[in-house]
Every structure is written in structure tokens, then in C-alpha cells.
Image 1: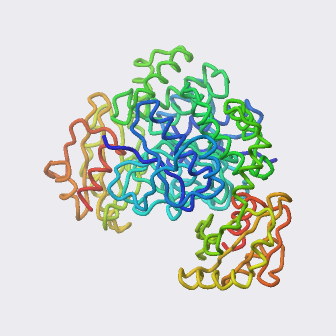
Image 2 (image 1 turned 90 degrees about the vertical axis):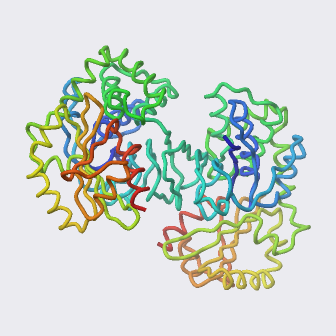
Image 3 (image 1 turned 180 degrees about the vertical axis):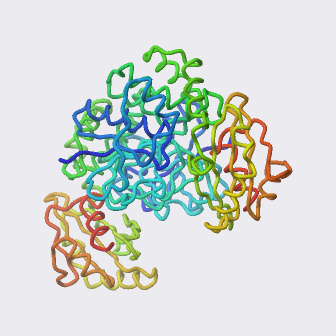
Length: 307
Length: 307
């Protein structure tokens, strides 16, 4: 049997990259020829984690055509997945997102739990299979949890994520607060990023009712690093909306120190999107106090507002 | 918080009814106010199992409008689920089928495994939660496994189903072969069924290429109980084909003692359907030696033959 490819979503984040590496490792331990791959560039935060624990980034692929079997981690929606995903057999999914635009011809192993991070589920699967977690693998898993929960401060964070994070930090031998903040700051350092980079860094496509939409999110220590360039940003967003036939580009800048966000919304349903949050669109901006989670605080609101 | 409803698919079978009861019980043990309900009549086989282990059939509902949260067992495709399913929050799915025509707005607990029966997965979830399985609940779970795997003889049956079945039989204190055959025979007793009943008892609609089709299946101890009434049956099938614009009605009678089937095929692609099995359509019948599973031995063949 040929190799099983394991990968997360396009525009990969730390959970997606590390969960592919970690789950491929786990499958190898039970005798399955699995290889972690990625669907895009590794961001600064993820690179910081890979360097810290001594891993190379997985091989990059753009399409799965030619593969026979694949395992998806940290996503399920086909538009966020590899090109050609409809043509291959998906044997497993390990995820913590809503399910949409996903289907298979055959029964499969699908494990989704409403927790803050894929790594928290993987931590259980290691236990269920009685496989020991090496220190460097634990370090990657901790990095994913810190990233997805913003150091346990996101509303997506559950007791299970905190418990898993503490267990994994102990195995990895790192101080969570110290390492976690250093990693988040590495990711929030936008100084070497062009606005084009920021647009694609963590952008996900969604279909809200009839409306084709993109919700992008960047973390910042100082949100004015981004919002200070709003005029230039809007030109790019408008271009992207026109070229891709979007009804909405919702660009969220999250302040990782104060745990608030501001979005720049462009597209024919931008006002409706703002209203969904009980807010007004002023200067194409929506102020989102206390909002840090795309999954829990943004996507459900837009799903409802635009249905 | 209001009650969480737990239910399986329309035209319920033994796995669907018992898994709703069993999973509602499990949720109650961990403090969740869950109620099992059903989306249709209880068949003879399921009633036999309920009677044997001292359970009432769950309350019947036709729609979930008004419910807040629901848990699906043994299915996920919305067309097989309750009316109004799009309007409620699905918090969990426990299933063993392919995933299609399913979506949620929020993250959820989704547990699918490629095994023969939902009860086999529930058996794991009891262990993961360290909840003891009472004898009568184990009896229901065993009944589901016997039903879905035709006493371990279906090609959908896995090693995990056999192991779970043996564990559960031991807890329930029943002899698998003796109890299992009695239960299957109760389901295969067609003496109180009209041909109209048989047509709808376990009929599922499929689209094979351009051809709208129905594949129905009944279990029988003596297939002549049904095939002896073929003339009358064909009148009904032809009427159904005409009224519903079908290209194929594939009515399968399965001999549960010898594990063979015979189909009566009506519709413009009936001959092509027979050829898919390497057989000839004679007197509108197709002989299907060794075929017992619609999911694994019939639907894939028709999908290929009629594409």
C-alpha cells in the first residue's frame, strides 16, 4: 500500500503543521506508512516552534492528485483543503471545527471534538493507543494549544485544553507562560510582512448562505501596525473581492495582549456582517470587543447574519 | 437547559432504536438530561429485542422543530433525519456510515468509525467514560450488532464488532447464536406484513448516475413467503416506479439462514442492474449468491453498473 498523506488546511497555522507531524508520527508507531505534508508556507510562529523542538517543516504539496489515501487534521471543509481532495479516499479526519462542505463515498474514522485545539484530541489518541509521547513531540503539541487558545485566553479554550497543555509542558520540560508568550510574540511580529502577506497568512474561505466569503485573521501586539495602513489594505481587499468574486472579505486584527479585535470588512454584505455583531460599519471597520476566536465568535455570527 | 433529544434515522432499524436508548442512558449517567426518541415505527425484530430486555419503545416524533439540541446516532445525512434538522443545534453524532449532506454551524463532537454497528462504538465510549454497562443495556447493544452484521456474517462486520458482541453477550448473560437467530427470525417473520408494508420497511432512495432508484431489502427465513407473491409484488413495484418517476426499483429478499439474496428488479435499467452482478434478469428476478449487505455488496455494484 502506498503512503498515507497527513495534512492540515491551506494557509497553515501552528496547530495544522504540528498536528500533521504529530499524527503522522503516531500512525508510524502503529505501523502505518504516513507522511506529514503541508499546503502552504510556514508562518513565523510555527517556525519558532519547529526550531525550538528541532523539527523541519513538512514537505510542501499543492495537490493530492495521485495520492491514494489521505488523513485530514485540523480542517474538513474541502475549500480549505488540498486541490484534488474530491478524487482521493479520506480515511480519517481529526478536527475541532464545525463540519461543512465535506463528504465521502465510504465510511471513515472521523473524530471531532469541540475543544480548542487538534493537539488536545491527539493527546487522547496517544493515550487510547498506549503510545508514549516523546519530549519534542509534546513540545509541538503544547505549541499548537498555546497558539489556538492564545495561551488559554480564547473562549474556545476548554478545561481539556488546559489539562492537556499542562501535561505536555511537563513532558516537554518547558515553562508554559514563558515559552508560550515568546512563541506568540514571534507570530505577532509583523515587521517583515507586507500587507499581501498578511492577507493570505491565515485566510479561510467560507460559504455563508449564498455569500462567498473570506475571513482572515492576524495576531498583533500593536494593532496599529496593521490598521495604520488601512487605506492601502482596502485597495488590496477590494482587488481580492473583485478577482475572486467574493461577497465579503472580513479581515480581523487581534490584539493578543488585550484580547480584542478590530475587523476591516469589504464587500456587498459588509454592513450586514457588522450588524450581525450588533455593531455599525464605520470607516469600513467593525470593533469587536473581547473577540479573539474566528471559530467561536466570528464564523457562527456570520453564518447566522448571512444565512 | 432543555432536554437533548437522541435519535437515529427514519424507517428505524434495531441499531438506530437501541443506540438512541443506550446513548441517552450513557448521557444521563454523566448528568445530561437526554431523551431517546424515534422517527418511525418499530419493526418486529427491534420489538423482539426491546421485549427481551424489558424496554419500551422510545417516544415517536415527526419533527425536531422546537427542540434546542439534538444528538444523532446511526446516521448523519439530513434526508434520513428528522424534519427540521437544519433548524436545531446538533451537538453530537455517533455513526458508522459515510458522511454526506451533513453540516453544522458550530463545532461538535462527531465520532464515526468504519465498523459494522453503532453499538460497537458506544461500547468504547462507555469504557472511555468508565461507566459500567448494565445487563439489559448490554442486551440492546448486542441486539444491534447481531442485526447490523447478520450474526457476524455480513461483509460489513469487523473484528471489533465480534469482540464487542462477545463482551456484551457475556454481560447480558445470553447465548449469542441462540438469541441472535431468534431475534433475526422475529424480524424475518413476514406473516403479518402486507406487500405494501414490505416495500417501505427498509427502502432507501439512491441516485445512480442519471437514474433515480430505490433499493429495498427484507430479511426472510423462507424467501418464498415473499417471492411466492411475485405477481402481486410486481404490480406494486410498477405502480411505485410510475408514480415516483423511478428508473429502478431493486427489491432484495435476503435469506438469513443461507446468507443469499434474490432481487426483483423493475424499471428501465433493470437489465443493466442485473448485468452489474454478472447475472441475467429472468422473470424479473436476479439471483445474488452470497449477497447480504446493501451498503457493501449492492449499492457499490449498482453505482458502478449505472454510472
